[in-house]
Image (tube, rainbow, N blue to C red):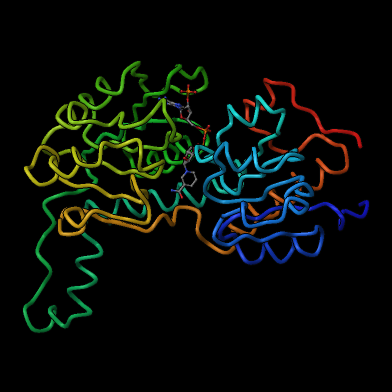
Amino acid sequence: MSDLSSVTILVPGKLNPDTLDTLKKTFDVEHVLDRDVSKLSQERRNSVRGIAMMGAVPADMMDALPNLEIIANFGVGYDGVDVKHATSKGVMVTNTPDVLTDEVADTTLAILLMTVRELYAAEKHLREGRWESEGNYPLTPMTLRGRTAGIMGLGRIGLAIARRLEAFGLPIEYHNRSERTDVTYRYHPSLESLASSVDTLIIAAPGGAATERAVDAKVLKALGPDGVVVNIGRGTTIDEPALIEALENGTIRAAGLDVFENEPHVPARLIALQNTVLLPHVGSASRHTRGAMGDLVIRNLTNWFQGQTPVSPVAESVKAGILPRRN
Ligand code: NAP
């Protein structure tokens, strides 16, 4: 590998520590923890050629870095990156697909089971000594038995969830913008149609404008009073106030959420509800999987700065034909 120690990579905000260490061994890293790049000297901003990040890269951050060539997103979902703006400037965007798929699918099944079988509350019952003092944890009104799962976003993660659900004996239906030709699961061209056909709605679609608040009051009503929602995709895909209403008044039965509209803020009304399982965005958060994601971020950057195509460019960058600059 050629010497890349003179190539400056900006890291705005927090990044996986193992990845940050490896990045520092390969590149000249400018770590701006509070994400305020305006603090950097003009000379330093001019030197930045790449960004490695989790979270957001808005247009003004790109505009502040005149020699930016590539944004390497740590995560498969890149709704935090203004890809349209990046594309208009000829800036490559990469993400980290596949390496996290199984971890996220495993987490989804755990959330689903926790939600329908109240496993967190049952565990708490034991730890608080109530098994001994009060007796058995009450029988759970919900079960996975007899449920039908509907997946919004049958992509890499959605399909890995579906395969696991098949092993649990659940029938599966799904909604994507387009029907897949490689599965036999029942397809619904609309989310409302999917919701009215199933009782367990699992969201594994990307965030962004196209899915914003797609799971709204109408969809929740269609899911019905035995309905369970599990969201492993993005918090913005659910109309959170409508979900809270639906959980409070019994329009649906329960929800298991790994993602929220305004992270890390979680509304107090959601926290107060007993029919929710709430996790702090831990879908891919094992050291193993975050390490694999970090390796892919670094491979994307090293490929690019050696004049090669990155391993995992996002579809918009491929479509725009953005190529490494040979300088
Ligand atoms: P993927 O392979 O691109 O799958 C996304 C799926 O969503 C595709 O099947 C796509 O099908 C469908 N989709 C896209 N836009 C849609 C829309 N507007 N309405 C309905 N369906 C739509 O991506 P992936 O690797 O499975 O990742 C999916 C998402 O999971 C990521 O974008 C990320 O937001 C989330 N995620 C969360 C965590 C976590 O920690 N909680 C971790 C990793 C990923 P069509 O193109 O046919 O619509």
